[in-house]
Amino acid sequence: MTLKGDKIFGPKFKYDTPEELQEAVDRYFDENKIHTMSGLAVHLGLTRMSLVNYRRYDEKFNAILEEAKAKVEVYWETQLVTPKIAHGVIFALKNNFGWRDQLDIDSDNKHEHNFPKLTPEEAENARKAFDKEF
Image 1 (spheres, rainbow, N blue to C red):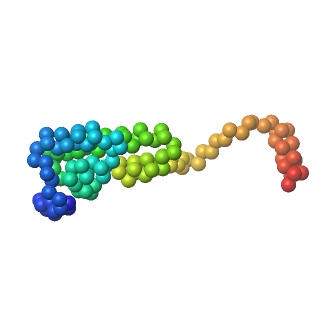
Image 2: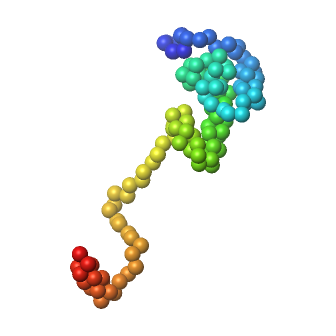
Image 3: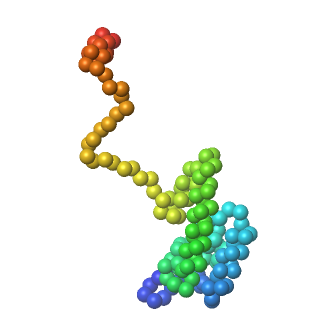
């Protein structure tokens, strides 16, 4: 389904009321142990991309679809505690829910270390030992 102006092109959405959609969404979660966005979309008669686009297009169904997406995200987040499948879970969270790796960089250039404080004599002895070794 694609959106052009006020028209939607693609599979016709088969739910006329929010209540019908809610029943279908609830049925998906009740009948499936593994929750995915693609699985939800197929259950609703849509492609995954159609589901994403529809959430953006029709406000009367948006809250239901947003809640369903959140439930799928919760499912995948809880899977992070199973290390043997973590890579697939991380992939799902990044690609379906906008998760990302983040690296914080301190640009103040204040480097601290956990080295013990040496007296000048200990530092000199350490330097001599290093020079002797190398």
